[in-house]
Amino acid sequence: MMTNIDTGGILFLLSFGINILPILLFIILFIYIIRFIRRTERRAEARLKLDTENIAFQQQQIKSIQELNKRLTTIENILKEVD
Image (cartoon, rainbow, N blue to C red):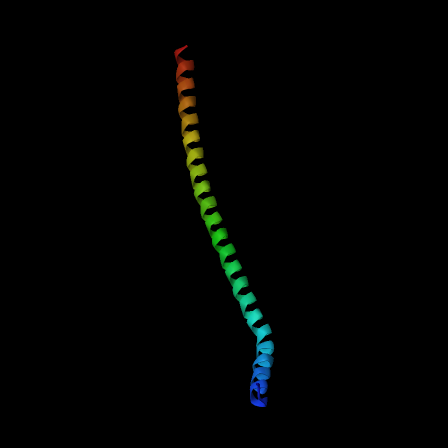
């Protein structure tokens, strides 16, 4: 059998839980939003790092191609002089 004290305590806990529930949901939502933003930021930083590496590699390739073009032009000029 429940007494008035037990019923009052249960009602207090129930009302307290109902009042605190929106705050807990807001905190949980806030934590998930922060985690999502951090994850997105890490992905963007990784993508930026890859892009930077790709640009450096492409610049190196361009320099190599330019050097090969210079050599080829020199060889063509030497062959023209020999003819």
